View 1 (spheres, rainbow, N blue to C red):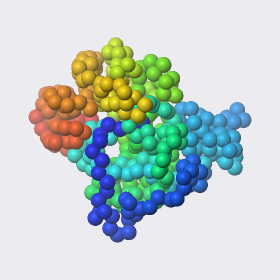
View 2 (view 1 turned 120 degrees about the vertical axis):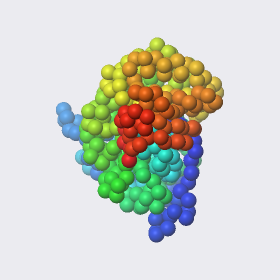
View 3 (view 1 turned 180 degrees about the horizontal axis):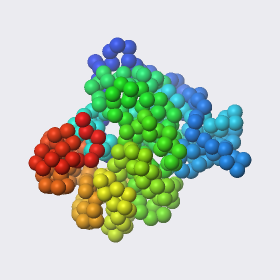
Length: 376
Ligand code: SF4
C-alpha cells in the first residue's frame, strides 16, 4: 500500500481519558511477529470450499489453505479445517486530516482515526508503509502487534473528535473480519468508515464489508500486466473490484501513484482514465507523484508535468474529478475540487488538507450543482 500524506499526529495523551488505551502503551514482548499474529488469530469467515480445496476469499489470490499453511499475505492461515485471521490488534493509529488518506469527497476538513495492521497481499517496492505491509517479508526490527478492542479504538476516534475511521497503511482486506468488527461499532456510533485497499480483492470480501463500510479507496497501480506481475498481482481483479464496489454502493476514489521508469507512460495512463470513465465518470482519480522511498529510494521524484498532462486528458475523456497530489507550488491548485458545472473552486486543499470548504452540504454555492461523495 502507499499512503501519501506525511502529516502524522499521534493521538494526544489528553484525548485518551476515561480509560481508553494509551497511544504509548507497551507492546507485547514478542520478537517473532508471525507467531504473535498467529496467537491473535480467530476463525475467519472469508473462505470457501471448492473442488475439494479450502480457499481464502479475502483477496484475489484465493490461496488454498490446508492446515498449517499460511497465505501469501503472511497473516491468514489454515487451522483446524478452517481459515484463521488476526483479530483485535493494531500496528499503528494516527489522528489525521481525512484527506491524508487521499480521499477528497468524504467529509472534507474533518479528522480521521486511521489504523493499520501487518501484512499485504502485494509487495510494492515503493511502499510508503513497508514497515507494516512488508513486516512479514522483511527483517523489520521493533514491530509487534498492539492488542486492542474495537470498542476502544472507536472510543479513541470519538474522543479525538474524528468523524471518520479508516483502515489503511497495510492491506485491510486481509483482516476483513477485524475491520468489520471495528466498523460495525463505528457506524453504530455515527462515524463514517473507509478502507484504503490495493484493490486485489474479491466480490465476496467487498460484499462482506459493505454493510459496515462507506468508502472503498483503491490504488490502481499500473495499466499493463507486467506492472502488476512485478507487484505480485493482476490488474483484472483490481478493475473488477472498482466496478463491483461502485455497484455495491461504496463511495469509491482511485489513486494512481506515478513512478518514473515504472508506470510513467502518458498513453497508458490515459488508457486507465478511459477504463475509469467506463465504470463511472464521477469516480475521483488521484494522480500522485512518486517520492523516493523503500526499495526505490534511489529513483528521482516524479515531475508533475506528466501528471498535469494526463489529468487534462482524463478530464477530456469524461472524468469529472481528477487530482494531482504530492506536488508543490502552483501545481497544488490541482488538489482543489471544482464544480463540474460552473467550474468555481468549491474545496481548496494544500498538502492533503482542506484549507477552505465552500460547499453548502454537498452543493456548489455558485450554481447548486451537487458534488458526488459523502458530505454532511
Ligand atoms: S488474504 Fe489473499 S494472500 Fe492472504 S490468505 Fe487470503 S487469499 Fe491468500
